[in-house]
Amino acid sequence: MSSQILLCLSLVLSIHGGALQPVPVQPPQALYAEGETAVLQCPLERGKIQDYHVFWFQQKPASHPTLILKHGNNGQIDKSSKFDARFVPIRDATANAYVLQIQRVRTEESATYWCLAEANYFSIAVSGKGTQLSVRGGTSVKEPSSVFLLSDASQRSCSSTVHALCVAEQFYPGFLEIKWSIDGKDITEGVMPSQVMLNKDGSYSASSILNISHNLLGPGASVKCSVLHQSSGAKAERSLTQCQAS
Image (cartoon, rainbow, N blue to C red; front, side, top):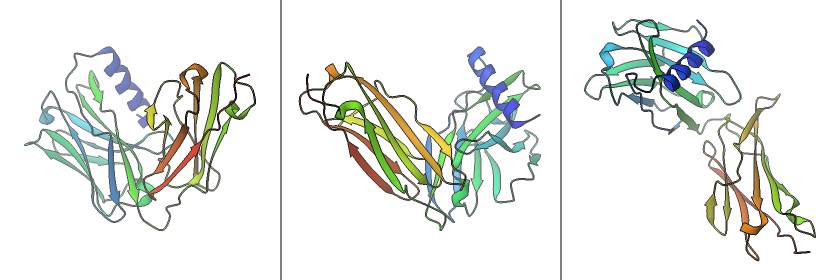
């Protein structure tokens, strides 16, 4: 069974089976330096880990999830040939948690890692929400080559809605955070989910769109997009030029 089918199945069961056990709870983010041992936790809020098999998946930005391994409740490990012995699954009975160690982690292993607990031939199968692992350092890390902001707010007359596009280009690995703020206060209203694109050279580009009512912008309001690339530590800010009332 392919990793895409397994992940889709887990999501369907999660949606339609809120009372199902167990409940994997994954930390949303993890940050390690290249060469360190990355430790990814998947504790169960309900259920006992010895009752379930666990599957681990890796999903890089703009790519499909890939099965890393299955760790059976009998201790048997079935690992994909795409992943080497540095990927080590552990069952921590004291913490009631599944653990995935990635020894001597590499920059290119920056990805979202999903755990899926399964029993009874997928009559019970529930995934966590994934941990986004960013690996900093390493010779292949690239900070964004450019960050720019396009907006109709620079037009001489004001429309009812301000449209803005924030773009970061040619960075690696592929996780980058784009936030919007007005006068220093973070906003999420009117912000569309960021889009990440894999470029032909293996680098990534990302964009975020803001659509906000001009009535929410006071005179001289400062509207900014802020970019953070954790693997390189690069930060950038770009500001909108306010339009003039017609």
